[in-house]
Length: 298
Length: 311
Image (cartoon, rainbow over all chains, first blue to last red; front, top):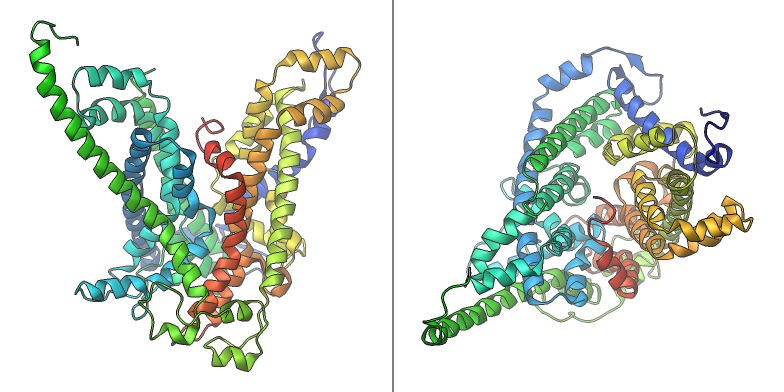
């Protein structure tokens, strides 16, 4: 790509060395990121089963997507999941971060809160599959003990998505809390001292000082977590495989099933593009909101 | 702001009593909340351990016991293939031979390949972006940054097609390759640190006749060993926990890593009356290395989470 060019200014020119230094990363970038992205978009306009070469079919896959009730259901289920997951996770993480800020900034506490993040989604899913088992799970034992009905958390269509959302909150809430906690450190302690001198309660200070100053960081955290949340797959694949019926068939699982279960790579790619568009739009909107509401500290 | 001081002495007594008590009640409630959070974070780990150490057949009668029921290492024996098929069946297992040592080795190889490659090559690129003078530097860096915008999940399907064309399906290299050469985040993260290193030391070395290659290996890398170690630990954990991509690429034991093996083990277990103690033993085996790593590097990992690299 770049050729050795004559030195323009008195500055040293390291072009040769630079090419050597970025070559591996550039190859990685072009071959495994840029090219697949373009190819993914190309494949979405084809019929492709992996065995024979892709066959151009124009907008067929997109027409099919718009008319596919399972796709729309998958999108609906995914959005439902994201809403529960993000609302619960953000509220809890904010609470944990503020408590840590006010109670103790010791590393051990942050370490404990982060521990679930260290295990894989698969591990988290299996542990909760066991804890929430209808007959033997300790969760249902406790429900029975306090006189409530047992709940088929991962087999009842009304419960699966909230349950999967909670499992993923368990794994990710500590990480989110630490991100917010890092944001809290940027708020000068003098603000709280001034508030305290005015006799403001903790709650007032939270509403009047913490929240407004934290807004840009919360927005950033939301972008990161929402984009991650939309890509939910592992937990569904381990616990429910999209069931019962389609009640937990999230978009990414439907895409996987289409590609590897039915070998319709073209259609799967089209849905991937659909998901990509959704994510780009959400990121863009949230980014605009962040800019519009930058911190009062700045 | 500051109120008048005249009425202060009389007021402070009441004023101080009430806030202090409410603060104490508040602190108490805050600690109750935190203790609940700590319990919720750690209990599932205890339950995994407790179940892994129980006999599967005894779990039915003792499902509400807080301690291991009929303590046994049977779960671990099944997971490491130390029980014969019949023994495993009698104990409530699946009977198929399974050997987690093998998957453990695969996970170690994949995570090590990805971490070593990604960190080293990203550091080289980051140095070129931070310190070397060349045309189109900012443009190329802009390209890399744009890569941050592409959700990893979008490239998985086309990358699978590519890995298949390369004949690397069901190999450890095929699993490692896509993230072995770089990630935009790693390049970006390290470039930030390299930019922060004082130029004076570097220029002094250059004046003394050291080459830039030498400066990179002898000065830049050692001086940024802390962020590099942090990045390496985080990369190792991420690749260890990856499920979706290895699930696509590996088909047989040859390239199966722990996460995928757990999924397979789960699907093999009897549908009615799963082998929970075996499953939890397997889960523990998959989780333990990262928990140990975390225990050793807790401070570094905990403090690395923030916006230093992102913002």
